[in-house]
Image (tube, rainbow, N blue to C red; front, side, top):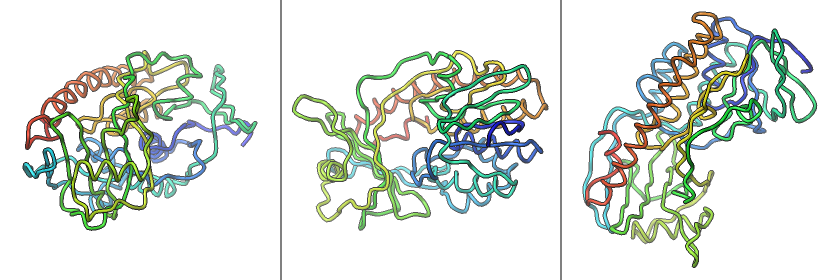
Length: 352
């Protein structure tokens, strides 16, 4: 892999990076895609596709496959202080696990002759008059005409380029999250438990699987500090909120934490290197815009890197979009936080 020349090297094999690699490869560009993970994940993470993303996937030929896996028709079942409060029928946003989207994109990319190169950590970036060299942690290097950083909110590419990530991060951990099984719990509903003291727990069934994505206010120790997620902690939270003694959570395949980040890169281009997706902007989860905004970034960046529009058109188009999404999702998050204090209301307030 030493100094092999290609058109574009994509760093990060999440939905943004995979979409970009597919869009470029189908336009005949020579692409390499690197990811620091050792293998693909199977985590639900971002779990909603908006119509604009499905339009992009129509062009890639995978939209029908994703529609067969996902669901656009669901019921939000809301509980308040342990009692059933209301059911709300919601349509529109396609519910589907992020790993399922990535799997479809990897298969399409393989059809185009490109495979993700795992275990590739970018430790250095050098720019030249006619290209970019990415130095990897194991001593190898990749040379390309352009580089795209699609490597998430903690982007190594962004840091190596010296691009500021302006905004704020809440000190307080907002949620624990994970994927679990819950045998005996209805999979016909997205269960949402809220309490009069402002706490919450949700279990969302991921279509085509037997798992639920869990989101909950974290447990806290005697000093009020958030405890790390564990299966035992998930069960205690479930017992406290749901009050369904016959349900036991099992088989955690993902456990993590989430806090509110509202940040945006001050620019999306540094010479021959670009940022897209969470590497360029992060914001509240209300409304399900995160993964979808990254997919939109990827489609726009592909147009620039393939020569369909000028290189500067990418930043001119997408930086205002990112700024709007940060403001919009912050407002949606405030609406949700207010709504869930009323019995029968839930996260559908983010869709208003």
